[in-house]
Image 1: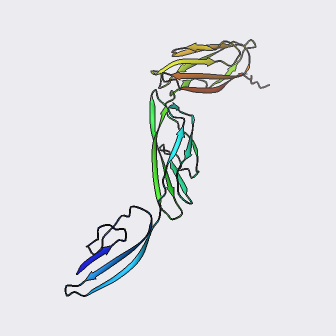
Image 2: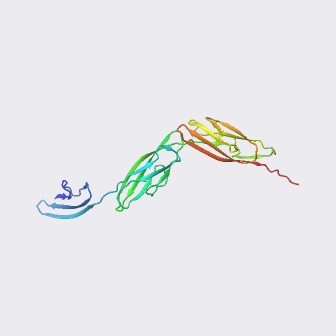
Image 3: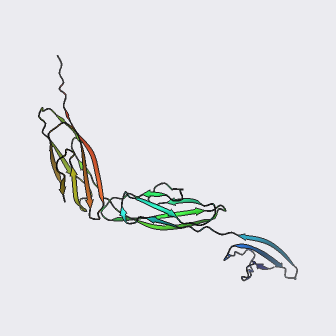
Length: 239
């Protein structure tokens, strides 16, 4: 038995029983199959194949090479009809189905980290297309500051003279090159390149908003924000 497949696009004919064929452009093509027996008997059948256009996925994003915690805006440039969108930002976060989403990447360290953002589009015929780009994020310093009373001080004295001691236990001390400490009491801000332990004296009861900004060698910063409470200690008594 011989097989003669005419795919309707002026390409070479197929001669196998179950061929495959790739069309180079959209349109309607009449596919004709002629089967011939060894004795010369033959039969012919035809069908019309509609080749529909596939969507084209594409996008832009900005900004790039920015610090962790910045908002990245993605702009869809895909073409096709009735498109649906699936954005994978490459950092394990949930998929977005918006046409033009925004996303915040977070990464700690002293260098940079790359993420592959992928957009998959699906048209109203179920055809899909994918585009990917690499996003580079500058890492924020990894910080940890220890205070033995968990930022809560009690005073038995009528004249307040309370000393706060902050111990720097940050994993990123090797690439942090500046610390700014606002002690929250209106006094001078401490500006230092390094510190292991810092002390600061308070002279009044109350709550103090303490802000420590650590800046890494890549220019990115991490802000630690907490409140120190200094209160009078109640004196218990039984009569």
